[in-house]
Structure formats: structure tokens, C-alpha cells
Length: 58
Image (cartoon, rainbow, N blue to C red; front, side):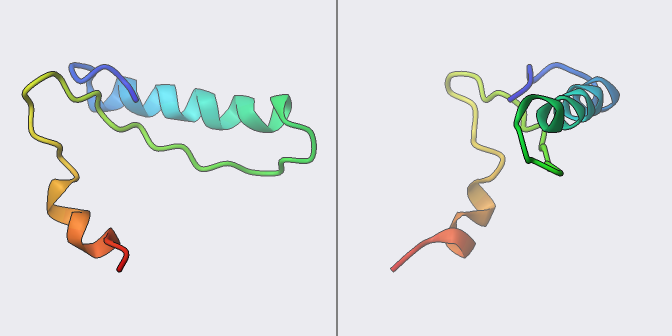
């Protein structure tokens, strides 16, 4: 999670930095994919809510 008020460019940089650091920190890890999801403030709608029904498990 990144601060919800970060610019797209800054959030992307956070993700790139994490993606680069992980293979150096975790032995035998050859790649990582990092998403920069915005932190949801109290009372704010979850931006992933419209996708929830695609991930529901019966």
C-alpha cells in the first residue's frame, strides 16, 4: 500500500524500488511483481469493490 495522495509517478517508483529490492533480499527469488495500491482512508470506498464478484469463492 502506498499513501493515497501519492502521484501515479511516485507510487510507481515505490513499486519499482520494492520490485528491485526483493530479489536481492530473498535468496533464490528471481523475480517479483509489486502493485502500488492506494491506502484506503476511513470511510472511503474500496476501489477494488467492483471486482469482488470476480474473485468470490463458492
